Image: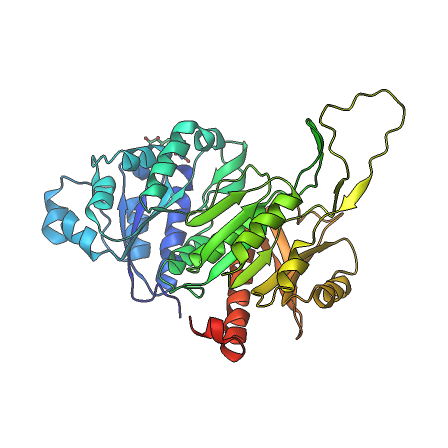
Length: 410
Ligand SMILES: Cc1cc2nc3c(=O)[nH]c(=O)nc-3n(C[C@H](O)[C@H](O)[C@H](O)COP(=O)(O)O)c2cc1C
């Protein structure tokens, strides 16, 4: 049963193109068992009619703040108290700015200020509007106040541009809203996660690296934090922002990542090594930029520490999960890695000539432990990370219950 069952959801609709998806959001929320009431801005009325939203929610729609009729039925303060959660989908740049600055100049902003319920927003706008520093600062303000931000997704937009700013799909929004009510499967569990590539310096301006974007590791960190875990994210260089509720330690090289992980791991319960750690580094760092004097240049490389194996070999290791990116024989090689490194689980994915994995927003995983393999089919990395974290939580809990008195105490 969905955790939205019997919850009161106040859906805010603002004046963006994606308002055409709002009736579907209402439908999904009601399918999950929620009672839904809709409040819309005046501009939302240019994109979707109140009549449609009234028909799908089976309730009168709130459109005006200073409206004697609405106030006489369920007044705005009563409505703010009625809500167990507020979801604004779509949330325009304009609405986010007004909310960030505490304006209460229409029914929706007033409700958001007047409610004690958690507020979630699903931004939807042109990608330039989304990337504008003003929008990003407003979002940061809202996040810091505890507002949940769902999305946006990347892709082609109504305006013909491509980039971040598309509203998440209705089913996704219902799922995320539901997750706000789930008690954390990893409550009080410390999870250390590595993410991103490492940079192995050759000289002051050059390094050896790989194509990892860090997206998968950051998605796992976000999902673990959503599940209630205390999350430490040891991250190689990426352009991603730190997920809410996650403590990030920024590192550059494999050696720094190794040291940071060993500092954090003693009291950790779960370790997930998602980073694409360089296996080798240049033996010698040239303190000055190497000049192109000769036709050939040979770099001697030496092995980097194996972080995953080092964690698994600890006296009292955490539940340890490694990632394996392989171009062929994925399951066979992953099973070999599982045994060789002595880890609890390998999350294996195929990389190479298929368009998922390393830099993409989508991925698929095969989870391999001592039992049967479990396939998590192709989906976006956030969704996949939530599925992976749920699998890890199940297995970690089962293992700590059966084996480890230290963890069973928790
Ligand atoms: C055709 C059209 C589409 C628009 N789509 C969006 C949008 O997707 N996201 C957005 O932030 N603003 C969009 N706008 C601008 C908003 O409608 C405008 O900022 C308005 O003030 C929002 O009002 P509200 O936030 O009170 O609903 C659009 C404007 C037009 C004319």
